[in-house]
Structures are given as structure tokens and as C-alpha cells.
Length: 198
Image (cartoon, rainbow, N blue to C red; front, side, top):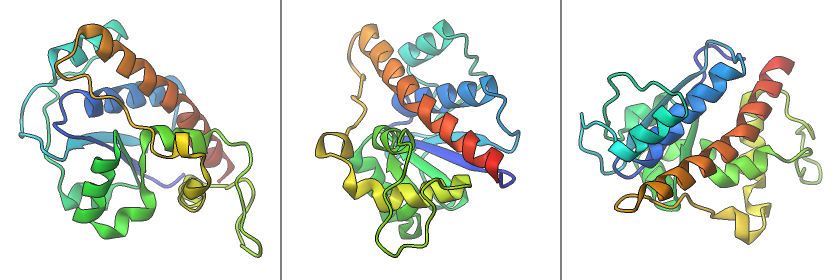
């Protein structure tokens, strides 16, 4: 496992979805006794710096026993993207914004839910003659294989976004958090598996 492997989560305002993504992923990594080199952060494509997360996101995380401390929102910038080994976004527009800011990140930037579907595959599609293993051995191999395989996902999975709960009842925030947690489980499992094999 590379030291300081960093995952960046991105949504629009960095108040609802990406804070949920960040904190749920961090909790999952802690619960799975992941390498201490794992770090997680989040940012928004249209964020106002230094705002607390939406109260409903805060409440949902509290219900899950997750402490958020003095967390504050951040505006997405090229430096955040440059330092991230994997970028997971809530929707397609966020992926587009990441790539526009830092084009070199295109192969390591994914929508959360499609990347989860790719991570859950037991075997990776291999192009004829390609020198890539059926089971990538390292986290970076997994990301590279996912980038090559993403176009082969069924259309109903390829562009699946997280619904934005802003302006909606608490229950929609809870549904969003549940969708995030379900997507994160196979990602953590597969990244840790690849890390252990390295």
C-alpha cells in the first residue's frame, strides 16, 4: 500500500453529499482497520469556504455515531486534485469539473456509484493482448483497471448519480447516506484486498 494514499470526495457545495461521503468512508476505513496511510477529504465545485455542513447531514452522521469535529467546507482546487490518488464524485458534472481543473486526473476520477459497481466485480475485463492482471494487485492497479473498464458497464450503472437531498426532508438525507454506505462497502473491501496483496 503506498504511504499517504488519499481519496477526495466531490459534490457541489460541499455541504450535503460530499461531507457524508467523506465521513462515511473514513468511518468504514477505521472500522476495517485500514492502513493508517489512508486519508480522506472532500470539496465542492461551487463551495463557499468555511461553512459548516448542512444540519441534516450532521444529524445523519451523528445517528451513525460519526463525530465530525470542527469540519468546514472547502472549494475544489487543482492542488486538491493533484494530491488525490482517487477522486470520487456525486455526479457527472462534478467529474467534469474535476477534469476541467486538472486534466491529468481523468483516469483516476469516477462517479461514486459506478466505481462501486466496478470495484464489486470479481474479475476485470481484459482487452485482447493487454498486459494487465485479471485481479489487480495494488490499489493503483484497481483504479487503472476501473478506468479501462468503465465504458463496459451497463448504461443503467455507468452514470448513476447520488441524488442531491438539499431542500428536501431529513428522510432524503438518510436515503442518500444509505446509498453512500452501500457504495462504499465494496470499494473499501477491494482497495484493502489489493493493498494487502501488494
